Length: 86
Ligand code: SF4
Image 1 (cartoon, rainbow, N blue to C red):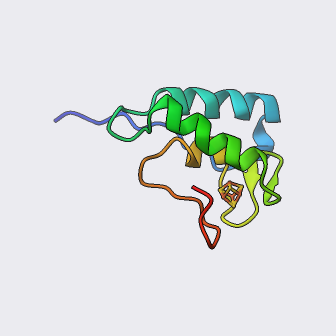
Image 2 (image 1 turned 180 degrees about the horizontal axis):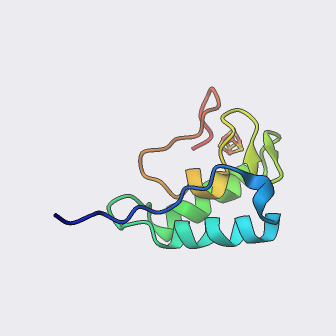
Image 3 (image 1 turned 90 degrees about the horizontal axis):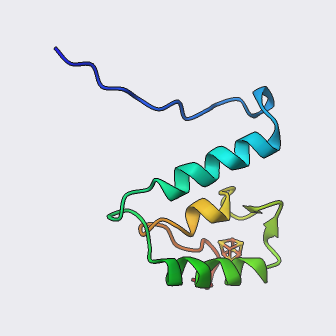
C-alpha cells in the first residue's frame, strides 16, 4: 500500500515570520498546476486592479480574507466585490 505525501498547509501563523510565510506563499503560487493557474497576463491584470482597490490591506482582501496574490492566481476564483473588479 502506498501512502500519499501531503503538504502541510500551515495552520498557525505565529510559528514563523511574515517573511517566511510570504516566501512559502510565493512558492506555493509558482507551483500551481497549469490547469489551476491563470495566465501571467491575466494574473498581473488582476493584481493591478487589487493594488488600486481600497479593500486591499497588507496583501489581503478585506472582503474575503484571501491573500490576493493567491486568489488572483487561481482560475476558479473571482473578485468578491459587487460588482466584481475582476
Ligand atoms: S479581490 Fe477585489 S475586492 Fe478584494 S482587493 Fe482585489 S479588487 Fe479589491
